[in-house]
Length: 329
Image (cartoon, rainbow, N blue to C red; front, side):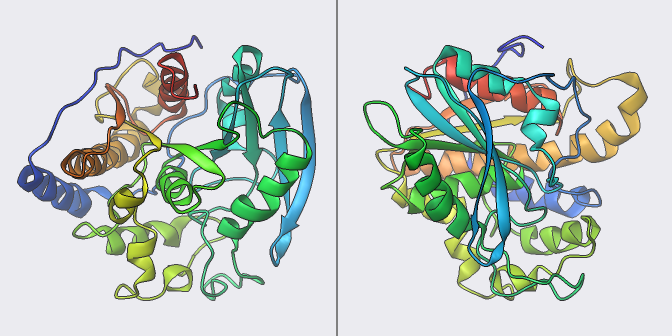
């Protein structure tokens, strides 16, 4: 697949009243499917790229976390890429389903921590008791502590700012914004691709609760993550509520509009329509709500809109679009 294949357009301000109504409607009709990774895979990149390596980092009480990374001398930035809700333990979905590792050949080192299905890359309150999880997720600790230290030791902290970029898709998108905003010592830019950037919008907590019941090993108890719906941790982990911490960062927010595009093939029409389109419409409304709130608070946001559903080809295009427009510079 080629770089920047989709034709993007930038967006302006959106009516907050319209956004709130649209978010609520999309939430009510939309989440019979699963948030994260609903799209079909595109071609896997075979072989290894320049300077590819695999290593493990301490899991902060979880099992050690596998990391696969691509580095080239002289590159100007390193980006940590977060997966979607159905993350696997062998390879990141980014490596399986996209060609973004090839950014290493044109200036950007790529790092992919592996695992963490349904984790939202957060530090949970407790193990998920619904599916017998034997340890508590501590993904924020891994990314901001053990992973960053391992990358520093391996020479991945590069560029004039000497800070990392972080980006993710779906559940990894909203996590990337929160992690970046709350860890400015290590991150100076963050990107959300079809992320859920307004988690406290009407109906979202219930929607996520339903979605997490259908992620393997199922079901996950969302109350083990940030506590009950009234817990302040829901606000702490909502990108919308962290906009005030993002001033001075580069922020990229991308989403499709739910309409079929170049990566929707006839054999996948059922999933694309009833899962991919629905999920992307929800992500689109969440993106517009976030962008409107950011504009009100004077935070510039690099945006990307195009025809597309919740699928890997579109996320690949979003990331290449960000790179080609200077997001990593």
